[in-house]
Length: 325
Image 1 (tube, rainbow, N blue to C red):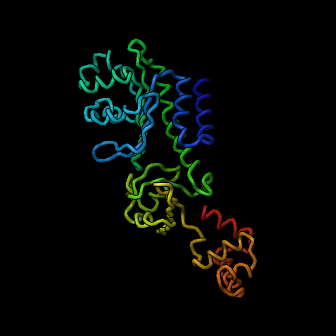
Image 2 (tube, rainbow, N blue to C red; image 1 turned 60 degrees about the horizontal axis):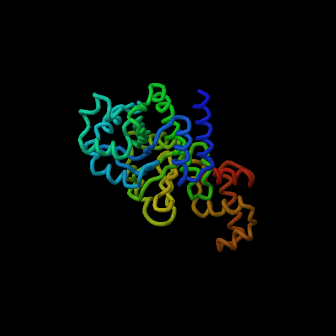
Image 3 (cartoon, rainbow, N blue to C red; image 1 turned 135 degrees about the horizontal axis):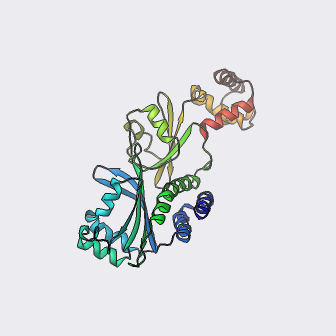
């Protein structure tokens, strides 16, 4: 328990501090110190009609061609199929020595197992039923005489959801966004591709999506949201109960979803005035920037105070910040 607790503490600290490009390798380094294995594979993806569609793959202490060669034989991977059918359970398989597994392995799979030192494996798949995203992690030992124990299997099974959650946290912490480390209450974020297929989602995303679309399930976003995913600028969708925005994120997109707030009552011009006034600009400076009269700025501010039900600049700045973060 002490080793497990220490591993978890280190894992979540790494999620906050280690760059995304290094996180999975560093996390597996730490796991390997607590539970010895020779190599590992950590993949994430989406559940499709014909099985899993891999989005990312971290190949740990294996040659780069391992995944390429696996693609040629994956249709024969009975262990992968069984793991998908037992979500959340870690399977302990002695692939080259257990008489229950040897007859089930296709010759090409057996050759792959021996070539890459996968004689013993602890493999686990977990999935989010609504979002239909999955994470799969396998630990491998090459020595046929060094099988995993039941204690080690349970260790891995209990570790698995923490690996997935820490990786998810790490991706959102290190996104290229001006306010990438903060998500206000009632807001959630997701990473998707330009076709609207989910890759990652923060806590609360599923709840907000189902509040607007009760029958929705991933990984494909609702059709009505696809319109805000095109183009290079931020775009916004306003529904019955939620607001969605999309911003470019390298070759992906960052989708933000929040509940509708009082800020959504403001007109675009009122919102521009409120942003500037909340940042400390005076009437004349705002008027100059927006090419309007100072008296018009005052009129807008009176309307803004009324719509938001407030009477001071500090409260205005707070409300605008929370709605747009």
